[in-house]
Image 1 (cartoon, rainbow, N blue to C red):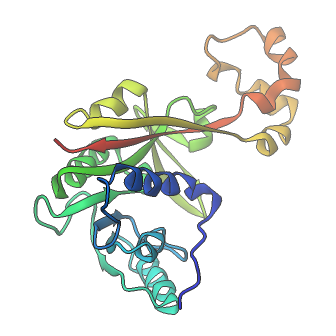
Image 2: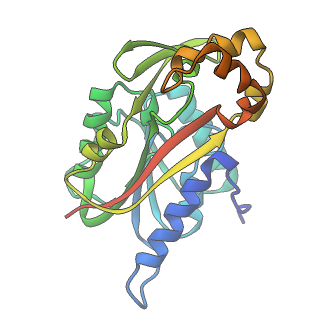
Amino acid sequence: MADSVILRTNAIPVYGFLSRIAADLPDGETLAGRTILDCGAGGPLPPLALFCQHGFQTWGIDASQAQLERAQQFCAEQGLKVDLRLGDMRQLPFEDDTFDYVYEHYSMCHLSKRDTARAVSEMIRALKPGGLSFLGVISKDTWPLSTLGQEREPGEYWGDEGGEETLHSAFTDSEANALVSTCEIVHREKHVRYLSRLAEGLSMEAWMGLRQEADPVPTEEAWRAQYGQRANAYRYAHLYYCVRKP
């Protein structure tokens, strides 16, 4: 029998989505046999395994063959029957109205803003009417945004991640709301994680170099005085949605 899957702490919102699905079920109905698609399902500890263990019929796509193979290995070792295939969330290889549930977790954040809109549209297209989708984007409440990299296009930042140049897109609240405007917003939540350890490692010189990213921009003297409170300023914010397709 497969071991119970326990996901990493950054996947806590996925547990929340599972809980919301269960709470949304009509009286007397169960999770067994419900269909779900994970857009970005690769990696050594795929969240899709959690849904499989709760009786879902599970599908997942990932654009990386290497990450897909890691997920396949994990599922094989756990004895989990999961349909994992190579695919692009901007062009899902599924018919309209296929799944009861569709979600992504920390996958869209690496797309351009235009491609993010395409991916959300595809997720909704593949969802059955009345079905739920869970997704999220990086919020522009993240500070400083320069930690994401160099801004080359509005809201699109390129920086080093794991030795590779990687894109991260950040959205204002209104931009994020527009992505899901065709659906009913069932739940919307902004998660803020304070990067205290990173902040505490900043020198005074590095802190002063961030003054222009403050809003409004303070005087040098005022900014210098805030150095002792820098751990309360450094933060990563992610905006999550659970939406229902009409």
